[in-house]
Image 1 (cartoon, rainbow, N blue to C red):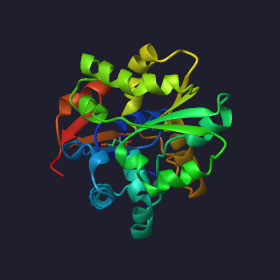
Image 2 (cartoon, rainbow, N blue to C red; image 1 turned 90 degrees about the vertical axis):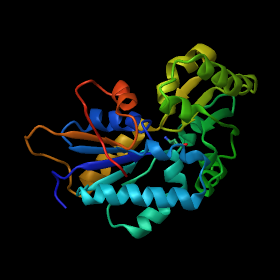
Image 3 (tube, rainbow, N blue to C red; image 1 turned 45 degrees about the horizontal axis):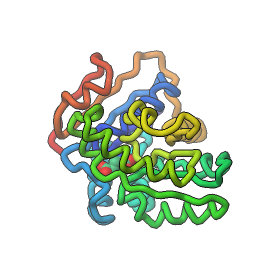
Image 4 (cartoon, helix red, strand yellow; image 1 turned 135 degrees about the horizontal axis):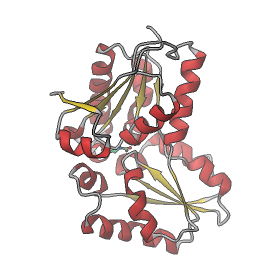
Length: 259
Ligand code: DGL
């Protein structure tokens, strides 16, 4: 394994690019490869076994490309499959989980809201995490349909606004002062969410924490890329390149790959 090898990231689709953006910002010298498994989205409605199978498939594609570290840029895949991935492969994995801890520590109303997929909210890892915070009331909400709308290029649609209202307003009524976005697709909904919930409710996600943890692990293993060559970022999707291109910059290179 070399320090110039890429960091691999995968998600059930385009949402994990919100994590890729944080990694890119903190580690601009790193080569990256991003896999958007949009063909199989949403993972949130699949069984644990199916999520493990898809996560292993994605991992093996990234390992074929010599990735030195893999970011599981999907809460659903992390909470259902990261233990199995770590047991099976030697490469270091960084996972993403709903940021319950910072919200719980800072909440003044002792009530926090979590919007995430069914697969995340039903996972054992999520329940373990919740059990560590008996000091707060946690209002859980499944974001039914949100990932599908994002994958179908309907972020700013009326349907999205109506769905978000139906999920968020009951949480507001329960007096939450933190809203945790527990799905890597959801940071793309922040502009709409801000129009629905009062400004005093803080929105948090885990993107920055994942980037910091990635940097820490690379440093510890002496794997930070210190070469002077211009880094490359490659994106692979097994679905529409257009939808992915819209949330990236026009200069980012996206390839179609059947996986
Ligand atoms: N981005 C995934 C996550 O963070 C979405 C899961 C899905 O495809 O349902 O959970």
